[in-house]
Amino acid sequence: MSLLLAIARGVFSRPGCHAYAHDHPVQVADLHVPRGDGPFPVAVILHGGHWQATYGKLTTRPLAADLARRGWAAWNVEYRRLDRGQGGGWPATFTDVAAAVDHLAVLGDPRLDLSRVAVVGHSAGGQLALWAAARPGLPAGAPGASPRVRLRAVVALAPVTELTRAGRVVHRLLGGTPKQVPSRFAQADPIRHLPLGVPTLLVHASDDTTIAVQDSRAYVTAARAAGDDATMVEAASGGHTGLIDPGTRAWKAAAEWLATQTTWP
Image 1 (cartoon, rainbow, N blue to C red):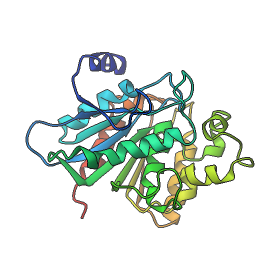
Image 2: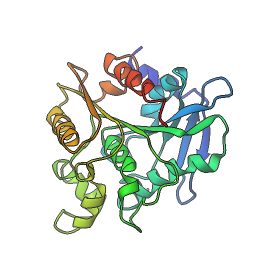
Image 3: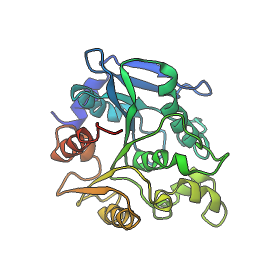
Image 4: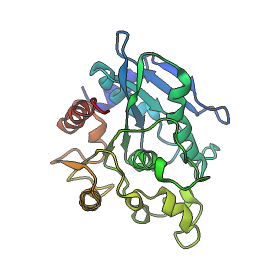
């Protein structure tokens, strides 16, 4: 099945939809849960799209459905983005992601094992996933600091790993350049939060023309040098969006790696 067809079919699926905040209608997440009583490990899913409102959680619904088939509860998150009057950017995009993750503790759903929560992010969502896992190390009072739910593993699919290399859209996201808002870059940039302290998998296609595979290679090298358990899967093809197709080898490798991360203490 093609990715576009899988996304189209996702329109007709009926996951449970939950509001994790009430400042904007997009502050919702879909919960896909396997059949049975659980408790199931949980995967928080963060879609990409250059932090812009053109793209949404529908693009990652096929991944959520696939993870549910594999025995994971999938929490497919929407968050405020740039444009369309959503008010995204700093700090709203980041506080939304943090609130969505922490809302898992509010749900009180006995089917969810909150001692086994991972995060999966694609592209800009990969940057947000790496940031979310770094929240325990944020300074007191910073957006997203003091998390209620701890993330135990990260899968970053073609992620933005270094914000200074992501173009002018990052200046809109953070409200300025690195010289103008240095503390925001320090808090949001994944490469500045090493060691992350949790197992991390980066998946990237060598023919990606949106985000260079070299960025993921450099991040994994730096993460390992800092002492992190960091792994990379490099796909020969698939471009930037092929990684969110559940039928690809690259995604299957990511899902299989996640399966090895369900015995955390």
